[in-house]
Amino acid sequence: MAWISEREAQAALVNGIGAHGEFSAEHARLTAATDQLLDQLKTVGGTLPFGPA
Image (cartoon, rainbow, N blue to C red):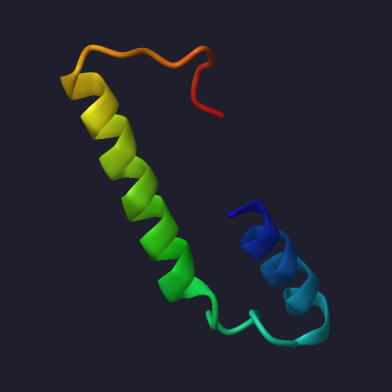
């Protein structure tokens, strides 16, 4: 996700790939997968060694 965000920020400066949401679907997929994993961890009573960013 960091790579996608970095590319989108760089693209915005020069109107390149990513500036118009080309990575939005992948970003949404990764966010959904992360949310699902965190929900599963919560269900089994696990905790993360760090807080949300």
